[in-house]
Image (tube, rainbow, N blue to C red; front, side, top):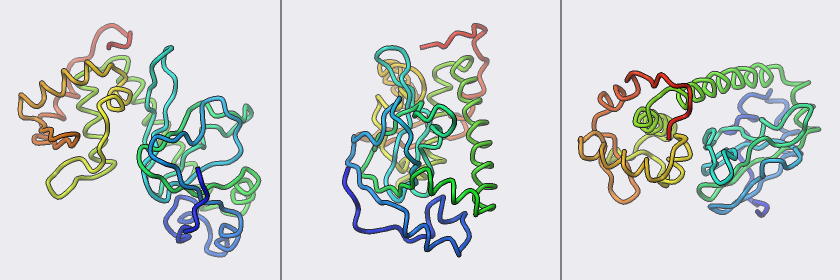
Length: 238
């Protein structure tokens, strides 16, 4: 991690977009901008909470330990997104970790300035509450899918979610390249299972893979895989 000399434009990140224009000088005075290399840890599960982060550029994965040697990716944060908010509350420790998946520039504010921003900016409070509600709904859907959706359906759902999050390139590839291991962690399964299912999707001409790039050839059929009958057992299939 190192400090970034190029500050944000005070209009793009979650905080700047939702605070009053009169609050911009205060943000400029209190924010700190940091750079993280690809693969660098921003904070770890169990670290004390000192503030929250807003992504200026790059992609961050928010993940949690799952079993002794596995991780579950909770969500991805890209330009304009907030992360680190899951540590807010009485415990004041992060229940998750955050790692840069690409070179990342973040805007960081400490808890004192966050609290001052909340007391001063009602639009920020309103949008933050909306964000919490949306994220809670999405987390509940993912937990339901982990418990009941077949693995192929979870992989299909993950590919569609990545396309919606990162868009597509001119040749229709998903706009961010994710490793197979991270795709496995996002779907709550193993690398070997993801490898097998991706080969099946390629064989069925639902997706195409070139190197690490993934193109969705048939989004309708891919979407249908998420509608298949769930398992009757509530256990998480791998």
